[in-house]
Image (tube, rainbow, N blue to C red; front, side):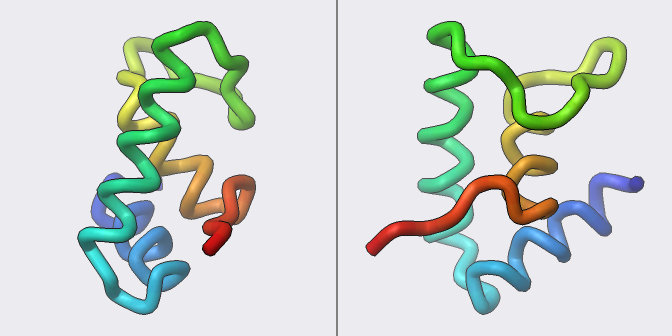
Length: 65
């Protein structure tokens, strides 16, 4: 899946709120960098931000208010 489509899917989960999406992805990136296991199969040479964005777009991470 292309990055544009992943980003579009992730934005749909936040009702188009880019700020909320960036905060959620940044938190997940921190978790991944501190040793958390990815919820999706990482692709070769994929960065933590791409992994976190895919996890969010696929609905594996939810926003808790």
